[in-house]
Length: 164
Image (cartoon, rainbow, N blue to C red; front, side):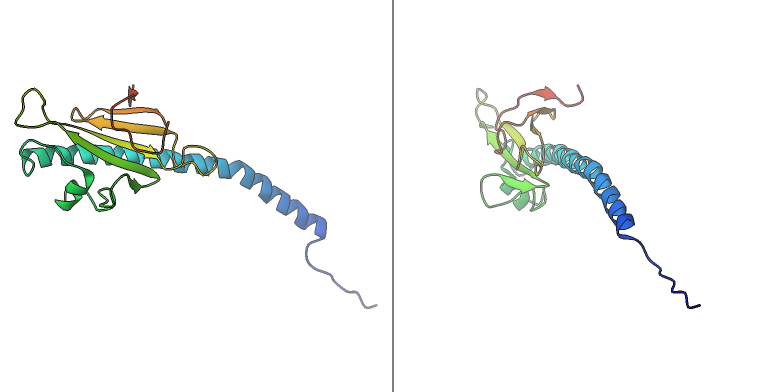
């Protein structure tokens, strides 16, 4: 009597395992993408807080009361070079485009210095969306959020204050 022992998995067992892995992936991937969008939005809010502090420092020291663009802030070492890109236009970081728009004149009481910082998602919809809300802030330090309408950073505060 010569018995052959066959070891291993049958084709049906392997197909069942593959099906289970596919079901788990179908459930997990959308949650992972949502987590990434939430992390991008949190990073955008933190970056706006950083810019608010940098603008206050710039105005109190180098700017003599005036505010600056992101490139100027990066040039003075007040923000990192990723946030303060020097390529002009929006500065991309963590799936968001950022911009700082200064205005006003410290010498003109009728037109005091102001600035608005904004962050807008690079991709607003679909599976590859990097965020669904855009954020804006000004010298008050209040960060406003609203549903994203463009991939260009906003130049005016709009929406509701975050946390409300």
